[in-house]
Length: 289
Image (cartoon, rainbow, N blue to C red; front, side, top):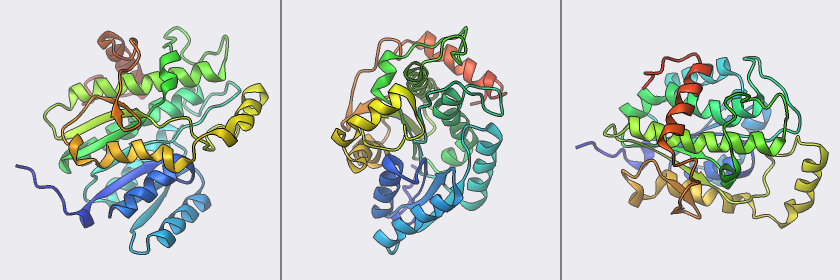
């Protein structure tokens, strides 16, 4: 029987942790006694977020990591740093994401919404999988969105280069999160590592802060009426830590409850097809797990 690490030995990593849902998730984990790694794109902002958590939870152990998760080499470097620092990892929260109003490619030649909001989840999870397995029971938490219900996987134009729409590429990436969660859960059966996805709610976070045009304007107009980030973090914290979810895997949660996904997200053939596409784009063998 696998022993559960005492609370002082629990370690979690949260991406997109400098503000919004990610910060509140990291803060909540610190309050529960986790040592928490914060991942942010900007070093100064990440250090500042770490200091805010230490101020709120004086006994907290907080480690800032810096990486642009849209770039595959930086995800791999981040994973190397995490493996070097942490002897175990009990929780990985893939939270970082954004929505962009213009088509752009990353250094890897991949549309940046798909690269950041989906492929980074896949790559970081797989890069840290051996550590998660060695730390089992452990959990992977993928912050997706109800927007996945509008998503379509455009296999013939995954970057939407021919007809770009901010919401279409975002919804596609969030559908990718849910499909990936199911495909990975099947592969991790019996390992003690669970993987679940969730919808945090419509939250007044900064994820659309760099978006212009009509979408950006609309977001700024409705933002004052959205829920605060601390409410958005509740489902993430529940999926990451709730004792009654021990062994629960391959599920999708909203308002801290299991919730049916879209019909597309529940399609095993589509799950496997996106799994293969993701590994191909990451340059990984299809038997990566």
